[in-house]
Length: 116
Image (cartoon, rainbow, N blue to C red; front, side, top):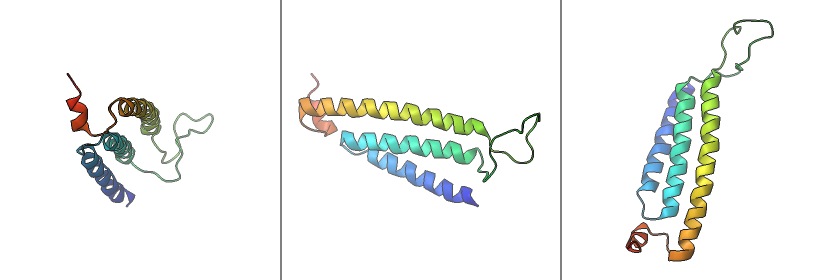
């Protein structure tokens, strides 16, 4: 029941990310990349199956979990992706700030004209 709504949200995030990445501003490009990474994380989370109230824990002394449990692998992948995306975002913000200080514009066409 929740998966179709998450699929719509993921689709909207992908659409917004592509729209932002096609703009001429480098700031909007970075925002688009951020939306793209969040959409990918939600896609992984949704495709792994959403189980509510079932922690990925095995009782002490048991070899198998009792009943339905959440899969911890997608959660670990998403957590790793969030950390990497934050590092890339911080690096991109520093590069944008440095480029803006030198060129005084965030327009990608004008930045391309400075290449010689």
